[in-house]
Amino acid sequence: MTTEDTRRSVTIDRATTSHYIATNPRAGTISVGDGSDTAFTPVELLLAAIGGCTAIDVDIVTSRRAEPDAFQVVVEADKVRDDEGNHLTGIEVTFRIAFPAGDGGDAARDILPRIVRQSHDRLCTVSRTVERGTAVATRIEPAELPAGVPP
Image (cartoon, rainbow, N blue to C red; front, side):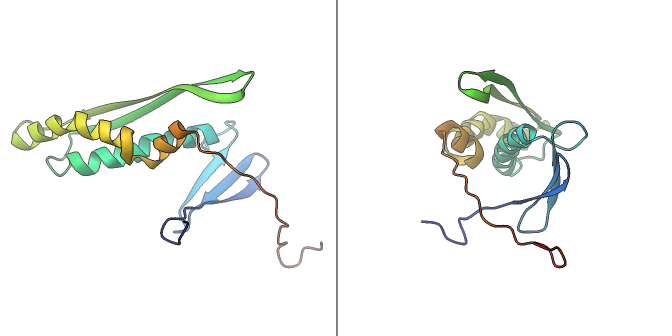
């Protein structure tokens, strides 16, 4: 069942040819493009979403024990074109995290493998959705024209 608490959305508005602005319900924006400039491509956004989702899970749990000295997540994949169409293969998430010496750092290092595994296996909505192969439905609705634009 979908409720206001469970529904997630973004709106994509065209800025220019092959350049768009994605806006979330909190008015945050990010540029999306075709790779011809610095804007993120849709594939890069997908990889960022996978990495960001699992980074949040891991950071919340480990930083309760110690503030990391270094924290980086790298997400890589191969884009292929085959009989099934364009898609990614070999998606790999690499954590590069260092914690300080001492009891807190030791506790963070000890929990790290477990929380990485939990994030992958059940917590990260993004990677779980990708792995499950959730269907994507599309539809077309009439657009509302801005004021002053003739139909």
